Length: 307
Image (cartoon, rainbow, N blue to C red; front, side, top):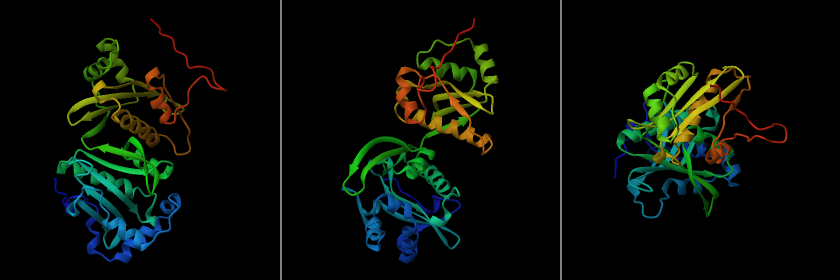
């Protein structure tokens, strides 16, 4: 089993085993997360927390259980339950993650998860897995934003309908580093008839931003963002290498693209993000909030090739 070194999980926070600190501090943070207990229609209790701190999946040993506390100075900031080497030797499972309620909305959870995933990848793990309530919108938004891709749905005997999600640790996305040659490679990998290299260079030069996904050093997907920067943005040349399709690469690329737009527009703006979907990808885009045309108030999308 790959070892987890607590001191290397975070550069910002001091990470210790929860068994080393006052249980009342942990319970105070745990019980402060009202939305969690409201969603699952539970009342926080010390007995339930003790069970979370000791419970293990079938077939796991005690040395795989890591119930952790994250401190910023002397302040307990977050708690996390990790099962190492579960459900396979290359994966870690997050059973519970809570940030102190008074610190919500400050990016602390995202920062902790980012550092955690980076460290676990350096340790040698390939993925992190977890489950959240199927209709728990806050959890879905948080984990999706942090690169966790739904892999299946399940019914838990206590928590009801859940979504099992996973983040691959060797997948990265670069911005504005897509060369014409790499564009051509990814474009043709999905069977598209490519334009000439000079036309590609011109298109890339006039693109707002490009996003390229990598599995370690291997390029596995790309997407271009074009538009006016103020009212309308358009998705073009969204391609994922066939052997990596249906593995969350598209979601990671789309999250990066949407994150770029949100970062570069005024907070009080609403802008449109548009595309033409292939028939096979309609379900993918629908799942990510895109509306189909025609509809009751709009006609179909249209295009014309000019030669």
